[in-house]
Amino acid sequence: MTDGPLTGRRGVLLPAGLLLVVAAAAWSWVVTRWGGMPVTTGTMGLGLPAFLVAWTLMMAAMMLPSTAPVAALYARTITVHRPGRMAVFTVAYLLVWVAAGLPAYALAGGLGRAAALPAWAGSTVAAAVFAISGVYQLTPLKDRCLAKCRSPVGLMLRYASYPRASRDVRAGAHHGAFCLGCCWSLMLLLAAFGLMNLWAMVALAAVIAVEKLAPAGHLVARAVGVTSIALAVAVFWVPALAPGLTGGGMGGMSGM
Image 1 (cartoon, rainbow, N blue to C red):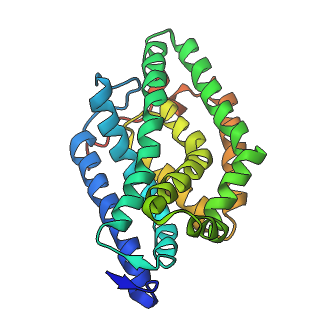
Image 2: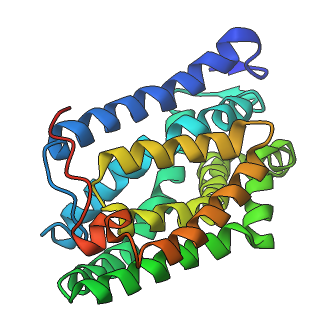
């Protein structure tokens, strides 16, 4: 145990490195386990416990890289350090996404049944998915959540007021809630692209990172929203834009 906040390079690299290592391990599992699978929607034949494991690893792979800077900032506000405190923060953050996996499982089950309908019906469902995602990207709630993720200094002041015994859990969960509010609309797109479409996962992870970390990230969020709304119209003419719901277009990442 040390007194005083972590400072300098060590204070940045240790917590950020923790999250990046976890993310790399999650990406490795996803590619190894699902890399050769065809694009599909639904629950992939998984029961709820197995689905939540796969979902959590997907979220760890996609979300933790862009969360690493916040973890580093949070670590520098800690005045009393014990082994595992950043691990607690990370686990609490991921538990928010585990909870989000419950409605995701129900949605995936419903969309899996929709994918078995005629092609026009799949295109209609895909259009709805694109439209919902795109409209949310343009809402004030998206802007508010994204602002908290992009400029978390105010959150750090809030976290410093939490009781020490529960601070790491509450801080991780609180930040996870803002990330969920910021990014659920992007995760929804996986329903159209295919839940285990690794190319789509990589692209969406990149979008998430740019939205949160790039100087013009808020403009990128709006551009993604407009693009998603455009896809809601285009998918009727090009069903392959939503292979997870129309059965067209991309296959799995068997070449990886």
